[in-house]
Length: 176
Image (tube, rainbow, N blue to C red; front, side, top):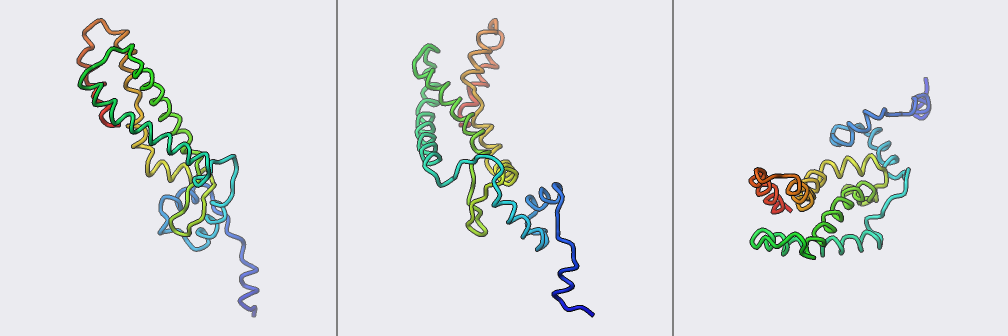
């Protein structure tokens, strides 16, 4: 008859499958205690270079993003009301801001986050991607549709019957 220590030593270590890890990420409340411990170890591993959510680069990026959002706050209503010519210098800035938001989506997949349960920084790409995909990715994709650029392309290819489509497309900017 063995002791409890011997019984624990005879047990094989818990090694979850990738599907098990993904399942545990999405359904955290139903994960076993062994899975919780394994997930905690995985979250702390870093497989590729990551951007720290509390680092200087991310702080600079967030401040730049704030200015981009403020620019959109004023430029979108102005563009919708007055329809300035497309050669307007602000139009070039619009395209730069649209590119900035598209780059930010990519950057968010490489930015760590602080777990709300234990306050630790999560560095694993799978955890970062699933957390971002569940929270902000849909909103970021919808708000980052490069409507100004798409409007220019459609206007250049249209012979005049696509004006109603252009009006609908330009109204999408209000989502931002």
